[in-house]
Image 1 (cartoon, rainbow, N blue to C red):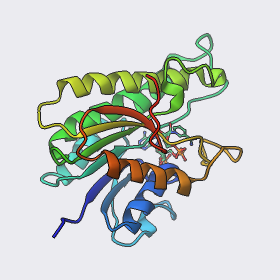
Image 2: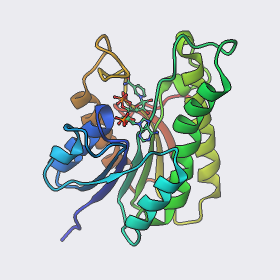
Image 3: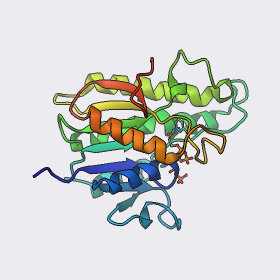
Image 4: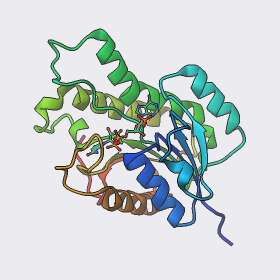
Length: 228
Ligand code: NAP
């Protein structure tokens, strides 16, 4: 009998992270979800059978505590979704060191730091390690000049992920840098192309299809490859 698949979704209080928890739960996965604030009324706490833990991805002590709690657990999927768009307007001229620090820490450094700490807990061979990147993180992408710092933070995430992959011991999980599409969330706004359901259904389908393939792939929710 196939085992019940297990997932750890980082940054699942709302938007795409919450959507991923919903889709995976509907498909019978056993899901652990992290949020920053357990006391918010809505979130993965409202979904039956989901285990909810707290994590601020930028806080070392918070990460230490999560890792201690999850010790010994093995996940078929680790999806690091947490991210911020950064303050606006965005420009290299006006951004403060504090703003840049928070943006690059949250979107690039902290996701990879977490993955490094948890890599042994992803099922070897068939496991998937996914990072929520963005098509804007492609260095060749001409769009999004009003999001110049956010774009650079996602390009940095892709670069750090690439280095992580080259240093992983065998057997390695499949690593995905995912573009969810332009999605109607607090970050994406009401004018975005698609809803959370469409994006997360697509991403879960890609995770199923890529499990066991190995390698590192930059793809969107439809499975189309994005140039680095
Ligand atoms: P969202 O609705 O703003 O949700 C962002 C999530 O990240 C929330 O759960 C938030 O938690 C969490 N988060 C932020 N900072 C965190 C931290 N320091 N520690 C832990 N969790 C933190 O945005 P979204 O659209 O769902 O975006 C999710 C991911 O997709 C992001 O990485 C984003 O860059 C990426 N993305 C989105 C789009 C789009 O069109 N929406 C397109 C491309 C990529 P709190 O509730 O505690 O703030």
